[in-house]
Amino acid sequence: MSDSATTPAPDGSGPAQLPDEARPIAAGYAFTGPALDLGALLWDGVCHPDAQVRVPLPMLNRHGLVAGATGTGKTKTLQLIAEQLSAQGVPVFLADVKGDLSGIARPGQGGDRVSTRAAETGQSWSAEGFPVEFLALGGIGHGIPVRATVTSFGPVLLSKVLGLNRTQEQSLGLIFHYADTKGLELIDLKDLRAVVAFLTSDEGKPELKGIGGLSTATAGVILRSLTAFEAQGMADFFGEPEFDTAGLLRLAPDGRGLVSVLELPAVQDKPQLFSTFLMWLLADLFHDLPEVGDVDKPKLVFFFDEAHLLFHDASDAFLDAITQTVRLIRSKGVGVFFVTQTPKDVPSDVLGQLGNRVQHALRAFTPDDQKALKATVKTFPDSPYDLEELLTGLGTGEAVITVLSENGAPTPVAATRLRAPESLMGPLEAAELDRAARESPLYGRYAQAVDRESAYEKLTAAQARPPAEAPRTKREKAPAEDPSLVEQVVGSGMFRSLARSVGTQLGREITRSLFGTARRGR
Image 1 (cartoon, rainbow, N blue to C red):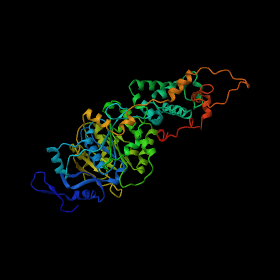
Image 2 (cartoon, helix red, strand yellow):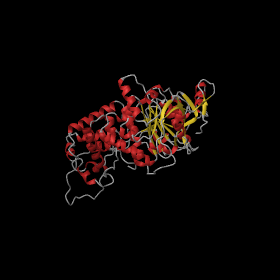
Image 3 (cartoon, rainbow, N blue to C red):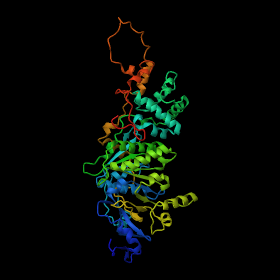
Image 4 (cartoon, rainbow, N blue to C red):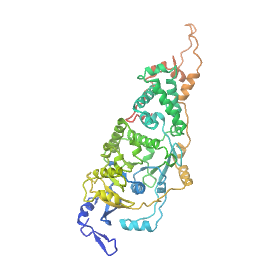
């Protein structure tokens, strides 16, 4: 930026010179390559449109944090970033907890407020909608149903959803191991319930000894948790067809990145469920995508809303898995932005990997607020700003920003007035969401749930099987026949024969990932 950079003074008397203290800040954002334009530099309450605050496009896979108190503009920041990523050919995933982000599919509405913001930030604003795919967990709400099989979801994430303790989580892992090795595919919750019910029955109890000493009492706790979970209407989230996360990496016909919006208003009262489902989506991507190293632009940017719910009461092993996933998924071209209220909501091992920071205003009304404010200030690089004062005085749509420069070094901390989104800043009508879902090329693939034969059907058939006939004499020996499916399940003594099927296509143990999720191609 040149020494002559100016901006209109707030009293309208003439141009305001960029102060000397602010020049190094402005210079830190003068990137030469492709970048997203976030807004204009603020100094002493004056907005300088010639001093643009930007983030290099190749650095978006270095992860980030968008934080701030309720009502400070986090949602509009997500919308702004998603628009610019899409325009540059980068697919985006957004979790829409309150339903405010669906408007990204339609052109925005101009007005005095938008015009004023555009003039203040040096933005050439024009109304524009973006290519959007609307998704809904289990088809509850408006969007294409997103389901996962229980086998794919795995014991670690399911334990988080069920609220199991560490011992119960380990026991659930043994149950999954047992089902995997016996060829009992767990598609929906009734499959898992059937396996647990068998293992707690008189006939199944001997099987517990063969899978690591799972106690009948713990198995009973898991069974009751599953029953209560289903009673709350959660069964719809598990089943087939399972959503293929590769669909999140698509481009629109015009080359813009597809914005996948997971509509969550219908399940926002089930935060433990949807936050864990978001982690499943991310874990599934992690284990399916190839290594690509550093790329010119991300293959996907994933916004993880209400991130504090994921970390709340998480075990050390669970946190380690999150940390490792975030650390390694960068090399697969995926950027992850955690969205929450304060940086203290994110564990330090994860926070240390988030190279791009957009911090909206914080409140300091209580001693806990003051403590959170001081902790937030300590997470930023040294700055000429008084960050404690600044963070409590930012207006709506303003934020403190630091990102990674083109060479990977942190940029100076910059108070920023953010640009206005160009799409509609508000929700679409339910009828329009439903119409968009029906018109999607994915609708025919995922709209109708499928209940094929799996563990529940196999166990039901096994229990209904009549007693075996008496052995034939040698002279009466029947011709050799391939074992039936039921015989593969029950064999001798209900499940004894299945021990011999380990290593066959049916009985081969499923390869599980860091989170215990089943790898694609299962």
